[in-house]
Image (cartoon, rainbow, N blue to C red; front, side):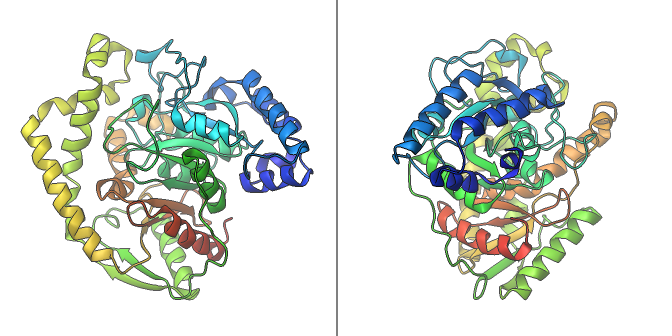
Amino acid sequence: MQDWLSMTAADLGRGIGKGAIDPVALTQTYLNAIQSHSHKKKIYSAISADRAMAEAKAAKERADAKLRLGPLDGVPISWKDLFDSAGIATEAGSALLKGRVPTRDATVLRNATMAGLVCLGKTHMSELAFSGLGLNPSTATPPCVNDENAVPGGSSSGAGASVAFDLAACGIGSDTGGSVRIPSAWNDLVGLKTTSGRVSLGGVVPLCARFDTVGPLSRSVEDCALMLAALEGGKAADLRGASLKGMRFAALQMVVLDDMREAPMAAYDDAVARLKAAGATIKKIEAPEVAEAMPLSGILFTSEAYGTWADVIEAAPDKMFAPILERFRSGKAFAASDYVAAWQKLDALRVQWHARVAGYDAVLMPTAPILPPDRERLMSDEDYYVTENLLALRNTRVGNLMGLSAVTLPTGTPSCGIMLCGKPFGEEALLRVASAAEAVLGVA
């Protein structure tokens, strides 16, 4: 049974379908693993054992009757602490929301439950989702699977840790500037950023609604495809027969290769070489619109974030971690006209980007230019915090600014990912590309 803990969600689902895995025993195995784990309280903010067991028993009855709801019926997963869950605290990693208990599930949680997924509980996160580091002294900072003295990446920090430490078959997170992809990369997982507007945000605590997206952190591309379908109540992408032969990739050169640390750069170069050796055509491209877009994030993200949370924050600012409070308050510096002009400029830059990459199957770049920073040093060295925090989400932010679908894959080098960016609402095509790349990189 312990082997179940490290299996992909898809393989667990197949085992349930064949009668080789009992959903009740599977869920109990996960709950036992959570309860006995030394980092339990750093990863999970709430454990919904009663709900999980009730859902597992229902999944078993369906499996016995050959009436399963889908390929993941009976598979236990975790949820980031910003997805509303009825009767379970949902506090978005912030003391500002302490004691907040929703009366109904978020739309995506309802959809997943209707597909038979088992809810293990809620996972810790960066405060109000406004940091890519995963550092949260207000609630808890989960560990990184490759270095327990380092942060795990955020803001879906606990979601990534729950899967990396074998305490969930998949974690559901959100991505506004990289919050699914960074913890996935730093914990050697596959992470899918969906296109803004594709997956429902109903019942999801917001940060920047025009950029917020929902996506899975998992052990395989197949898991991401199946989870996307479950979150939407739709059909999973067909990954059969995916091959890199004949595929065309653009390797972005501007911005994303600046100030790269040695290990992530070497891992990225090696991964690109392997993709090319497998038959993909790779062309280096410049994209000046990316360089023009990056400064706009300071206006767009902080203005919307502060506009959303100002009243709550200013009612009790002392409850916040100071660097996060400062980041929110920086949104006060911009006028409404600045925000409108920035969006108009970004829309024009997106048109340039889409024209430039239209002929490619995906755009490649390193997921992060740095390795996971040291947790204690982030707390004591202000300059280090600022530098690492800015670099952590720089590359992933390209996908959000340009409105793309994106996926990060492990490269085989610990905490180093390669990101593939696809077209808006092109998740199915991107997942096929990622599946082919995953087979070549040998990390599934």
